[in-house]
Length: 88
Image 1 (cartoon, rainbow, N blue to C red):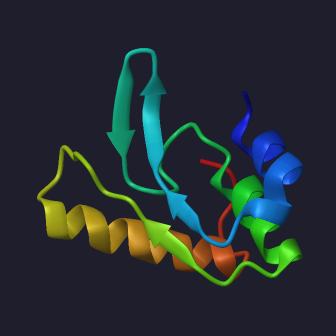
Image 2 (image 1 turned 90 degrees about the vertical axis):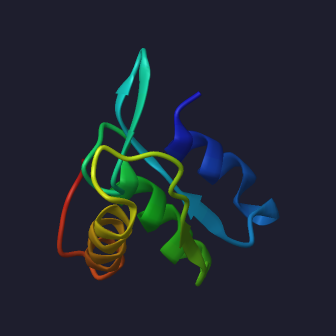
């Protein structure tokens, strides 16, 4: 199921978003938030419209050193929330 459609359908039950992105879905390969194929902009847009204020970067694996990866995800997530970058 499309994450944006899922969020729209269940937004009344969502209190926060745990943000995670992937450079590939098959096979699944994690990447920094905003660098992958998932519609992060669309997900954030749904959340902002509903008044969601908590967006948590969920970092499991990375090709980069972990703190570098987290820093990139944090920067990209802030840019998404402020409308500075688009999809993927």
